[in-house]
Amino acid sequence: MSGRATDTIVVRPFATMRYTIRWLVDAVFPADCEACARALPAGHDGPLCGACRRGMVTPPEPLCERCGAPRPVPGACPACRRHPPAFTTARAAALYLPTGAGLNPLAAAVQAFKYRGRRTLAAALGALLAERYPFAADAVLVPVPLHLARLRARGFNQAVLLARVLARRRGLDVDARLLVRTRATEAQAGLPAPERRRNLRAAFALRRGATLPRRPIVLVDDVLTTGATADACARLLRAAGAPRVDVYTLGRAP
Image 1 (cartoon, rainbow, N blue to C red):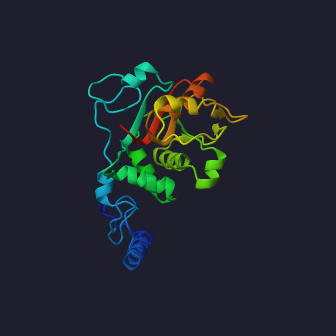
Image 2 (image 1 turned 90 degrees about the horizontal axis):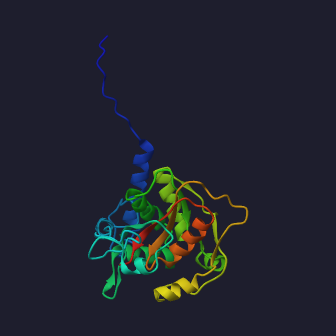
Image 3 (image 1 turned 135 degrees about the horizontal axis):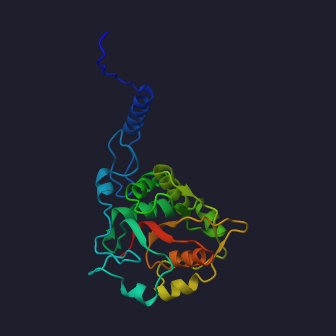
């Protein structure tokens, strides 16, 4: 009897069947890309077209060493020098550009996800987070919480959905109940940085009875603009004894 190994062909009938069913459904009921609204090809896997996915580029270096904002030269940006954040570093998977000429692919996808309830985008956007994850392998992911009133209105917390996909794909722990939002605040969009900081005073707390992990914490959110929300959460966590708090968002506004 020969000791030579023989090739084995593995047949996955269920995977083939799922693809065939998806292709047939797409052929009869064609879907559109959630970012650009162009038709997706039959059998396409996910809610984003290839062009939009490729257009979700990382923020261009050099970056601020603290908040991760693109800047002309290395080092800390003026905003972080004036008001050093409580988090150690903030990084994002992609650049977020809500430009007057039109949203870039990431911004279009995030707005569809948050404001039009396209929850199927969580898997695709969470996969992008996992693919570009830059922090410790033993970190605990903590999603930034929504106030209960906004959670009820939206129906989900986008940060929680993203963190769960990231945790599953990278084998990380996630604690979606560590932080609570104690009061409803004015929407941050459109507010300048000083008003954002004032708007968030005493807006977060540790959940009663929660145990703070003695491991690095990575705050997860959808977009970082001025960093005021992340800073408020990080200050609370550091005051409670967290050894290190970093921030990881899907998008970074320049």
